[in-house]
Image 1 (cartoon, rainbow, N blue to C red):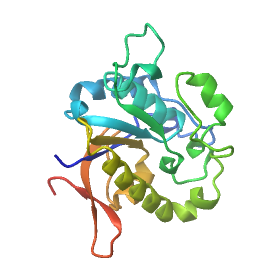
Image 2: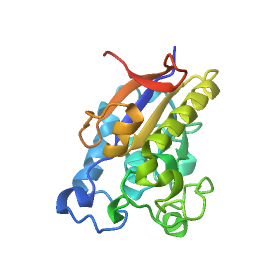
Image 3: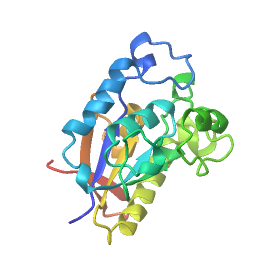
Image 4: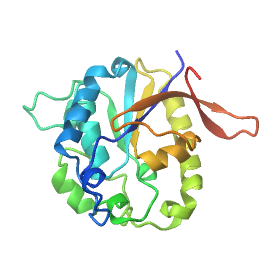
Length: 213
């Protein structure tokens, strides 16, 4: 079976309701936590997911840990929490999946802050200042960043080909998802998803092709 890419929008965050975009790296609302927790009950492909890649903002990490509590490896959760499974899926934090804008609400937290909030996660993949909106992470470079993420996904698909669970779940943000998917009209609901295959176009560029369309 060919690997599939499941693009997932984070659940409802505080700034989605109070529209205070000056709030730095906001968390999920109570409803958002319910949405993320409910995701795992309705998402049909959990048994196929071998890797979950998430934006390192707090709302996307929270969404990931709630939505995939029955899929992720136990090492990402507190001992005795009852969450996670032995030999579960790997969790990868990818700064390339952060939101496009440079507003505080779309800007991530310092690594030391994240380590205190999520002590079970490994933040070694993040470089110091990863949250600064410059270079590849500047709003102007969003299409180049999306292209880089797609190439990385293609490499990860190859790495998973000999695994039992070959699908990849990607937890990201509503605006960046438009660039990553190549579909400017995509507007998933909070904690919604769409499934793709990953292919090369005639120019040799890596593209996401929605399944069933």
